Length: 113
Image (tube, rainbow, N blue to C red; front, side, top):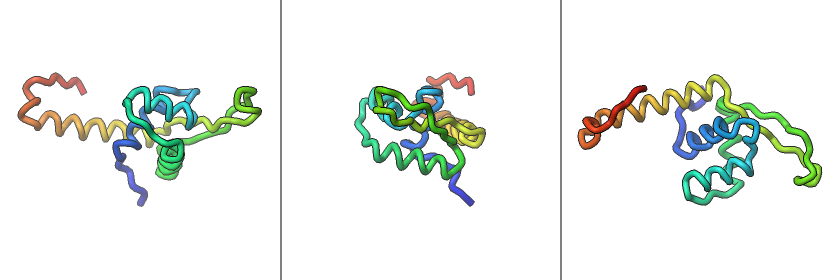
């Protein structure tokens, strides 16, 4: 059986694919990761994680049209599958359940999930 849990980097990239929608290609995802997290990443790490998420069935991809700014090369555009959406939901629900149990914050947080 394939692994269905998400690591932190996997979860973040999967969320970014959802945020970027039609612009969800590796270079743009890496840029957005660095912008959102204020942490650097390598394009190789992004590519290998996108491949792993695809192998898990959480992403699909298709080749976009060739563009002049890329010297006629095409971009691989990623999208989240229904399984990927479920994995994100499960990850969110699990983390929220932990936060609700953490006494230092449980009373201060209002969770609507």
